[in-house]
Length: 72
Image (cartoon, rainbow, N blue to C red; front, side, top):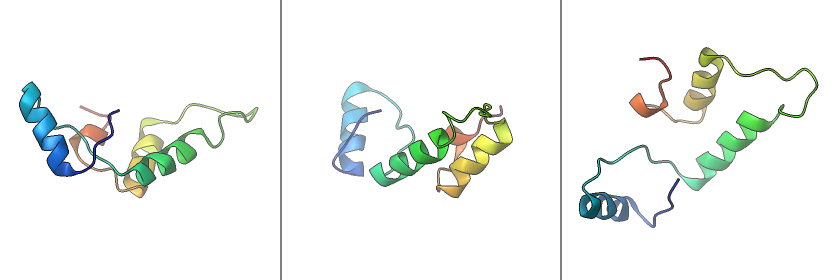
């Protein structure tokens, strides 16, 4: 994960390196994702999220698009 000042900064960075632009999200979304993803991690009954559950978390946080789809 890289942090940038703006979407224009992302575009310049990608252009100078010849890379395609990947997924972009706000720091707040990253924080909400971390909280949702790890909230139950230490619970004795913890189990890994299913693909459907993971995609639901992404969608709830507005993380949509091909990058966030876990199925081909």
